Amino acid sequence: MITVAAGIIMLGILVFVHEFGHFCVAKFCKVKVLKFSLGFGPKLVSKQWGETEYMICAIPLGGYVQMLGEGGGELGEGSQPEAAEMERSFARQVVSRRMAIVAAGPIMNLVLPFLIMPLAYMIGVNLPAFLDQPPCVGYVIEDSDAERSGFQQGDCLVEINGLPVSTWGGTSKALVNGAGQPLSFVVERQATQQFLTVSADSNALEGLQAIGLLPYQEAVVGSLASGMPATEAGIEANDQILAIAGQDVTSWYDLKEIIQKVGATPVDFLVLRDGKQLVLSVTPRLMEENDQYLIGIAPEQATVFKRFAPVEAFRAGADRTMELIDLTLIFIKKLFSGHVSTSNIGGPITVVQIAGQAAQTDVSSILSVLAFLSIQLGILNLLPIPILDGGHLFFNFFELILRRPLSLRARELAQQVGLVLLIMLMVLAFYNDIVRILGS
Image 1 (tube, rainbow, N blue to C red):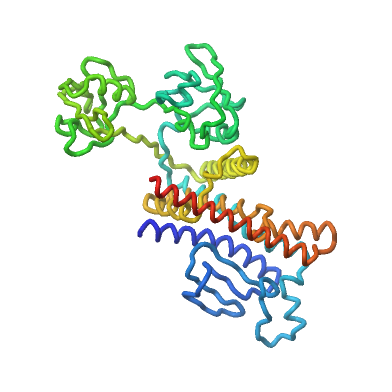
Image 2: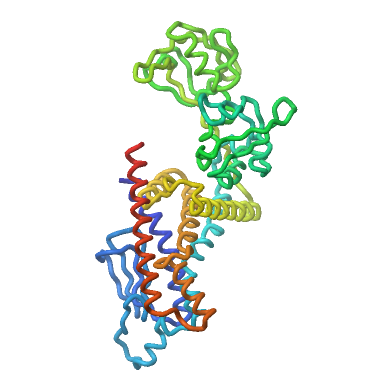
């Protein structure tokens, strides 16, 4: 419930920012705003302030600003003559003003990350340590696309689809850009360059791990399961495992292979703790549910805490925002071209889950997720689909060019098509959300 509540609050913030953009520009253009609502459906809270009714409604999946002459808005009661009242109607405004009012919502969503991402960087962000590592392969997952393509442990990525990469985290843009088509890799192996190709069927959107490549990770214990062999033998968190049964352990990925090989026999673990080497006897246990020998340890999730000075924070925040916008646009392009599966589309449930999980971490994570979701909301609303802001901008653009509005029949037909498309998109998004919940 805490996750859901936190997620709804964060979603409400994004909706408020969006609608506040419409509201402010409408007021600036002296258009009469009848209603400002967070949510849809039955009113929970309502307050008339001046000529505008401010509401919070029961369904927290959006919001709206209703202006005079828009969406069935009627003339309000007042002392102004009817003609003067009509001059404040949205429909009576010149096309440039209408376009400004409509565009203000998504633009506010796109501007927000430029304000809050620098704040996140000034507060300080925890980043996975491996993101800044050179993109060198620590492990190739068995029977993965990467293994079938010939990747080997120790390979260092140089290029992906012609784009140079220098860090593990820097591969994201190249992978998204290449989604839905074969991925060509240039890797450095023992001072020579190798050219490898991964099939188009791989889900590169989920990162290098999805194709079977993992970064180097030291064999440092992050956590232990109670009642399992490692705990009973005296292994502790932050212990580094150096060897098992005389076999050197060079990374975390060596552990599984060695433990499966020794089976359920007592073996000596050489561990490094506080600068001292210890030898502990551990007997792996066979787990019937997966037919694997386990000792009950999990790896250390190393993170790097970075805090930026104000000038550096604004630069880093702007760069990260532009990167997210770029990745989102590439994803949408790949989606419409059929190179990306529609199963990657998430709906309100996914949004609430992501926001709710972030809300239970730290302020920087909350701000980062808010920025990410705000970008998605802003770009989605700019798509030229009737019903959305982008659809209205599309109509207004034609009116600006033709110097006359589209016919009422054409607009009504487009609105109906847009409504059908939007309903289909929402059904697909909800379906994907439910499948993810059931799958997890």
